[in-house]
Image 1 (cartoon, helix red, strand yellow):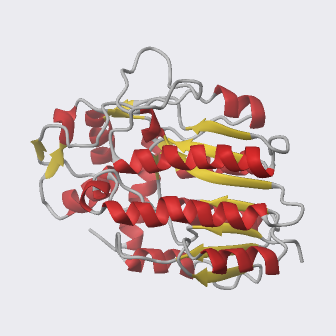
Image 2 (cartoon, rainbow, N blue to C red):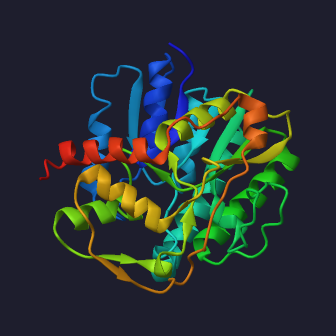
Length: 326
């Protein structure tokens, strides 16, 4: 039996996909998730059900901020690698429920780092950061680079993610274990999150309801397909930095797409036209995101393969099958 890798947020969209990829290459995985009700817990339970029959997968239902439990899991299983994806997600929700972000994102990250720094021969902590740390910066002809200052978060969610990066920097310096923070850019695909625009738009369009298009449709996102994201995460995990080094890497598609183009592509994928209601930008949102992934490419050969039309078609097919819609 191989030494297990811990994947936090294993009932979540990205964690579920990462755990399956690790299992497919013969790794043992301990999945951790609290399975909260930020969005439909039934979807999280359905993701977890896909692990049934995997002898190398163990699921622990617990709060990532429960430091004693996390430390015991790492110690008792001799864990040397952790992929920490558990967090309270969502920009808009952070305005309504700020203290959820204090516990999940700040205390949760500290809990994981404390467990890792006490683990003998610990090899690598890979954790989820976010493109939101860049703030609402103008998008020119080039993507956002990791060397740009990330000093003006426009949401509490973004601030907690930047705080996690700074916490990791301090722990790498103090305790000398390698860490990689991945700044995710708008991940989408089958088994995705219902709070994301493409998912909620699909639900409403198929019900014949109108959709709210914020920013009057003049926003753009670097939509990144889930399989490409997993390629980057595993690539980063397999290529740890030097002892005592902490790095942050962008992980995105490098092809930002306008919101109206995304909606049009989604309409084609599901075969229905949306009734659109234009709205102004919401507090905490950013106008555009665009990843420069040259550092991740140089390290791992990372290169996104799935373009938006194909990715949204795969999502639509999954959605119609999973929810038996239409």
